[in-house]
Length: 178
Image 1: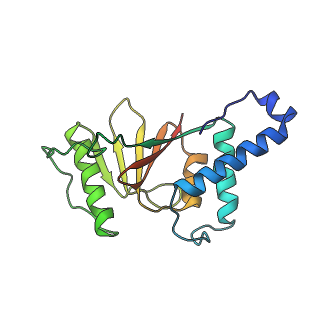
Image 2 (image 1 turned 180 degrees about the vertical axis):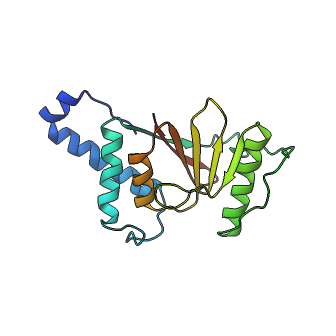
């Protein structure tokens, strides 16, 4: 869902803007699995506060967000070929599905010639993977659940990157910050 009106229009039609913010919050709430109903990793704030802040970034046009659903003809989003090289020691965490999905994604991007970093530091916390290649925006990936505080903090403070959330094998949520 994406809505990018001109700033002057926003103030004239605050009721429309509030409706769009609520729609984005509802979409985020349904699309992304968060760790807890309470944001325990946040120094201050609440789950709904962070959902609203993310929705405002989307409605204002500072962040583009979209849901990508896997076509029924595809077996997977990820290429199932072995990469020529692997990056050092793998850090392991999460459920079997989480780890297997991280391995598939890492292998996919290594096969395509990207560099992959496991558990890179963010402004708040870590992502599961960082995919990068010179001249292209960094791709930060979260597999499974995440924190709305961490997501908001990253979207609000970082530039020129894509934040990809992989909630399951059939859907991706993509946030683009330019």
